[in-house]
Length: 68
Ligand SMILES: [Zn+2]
Ligand SMILES: [Zn+2]
Image (cartoon, rainbow, N blue to C red):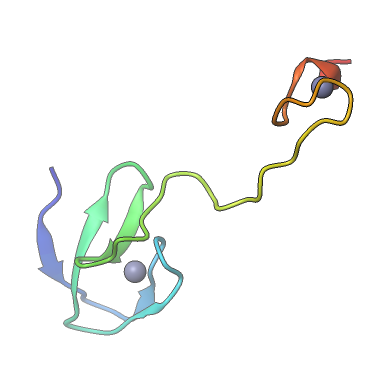
């Protein structure tokens, strides 16, 4: 559970990358381990990366082909 609190200093939202201004409602996201906007829906634990498909096995990378 993460409580919402007013930002005590200006920083950057770890969820959407937008700036957080002082007194803006924010919460500490336990999955990210950083402060995000209270209403931020973009809070994702993993960075957004386009899926890369292996041309050998046609599975999404990382795949067995990268093991070596
Ligand atoms: Zn945000
Ligand atoms: Zn592969």
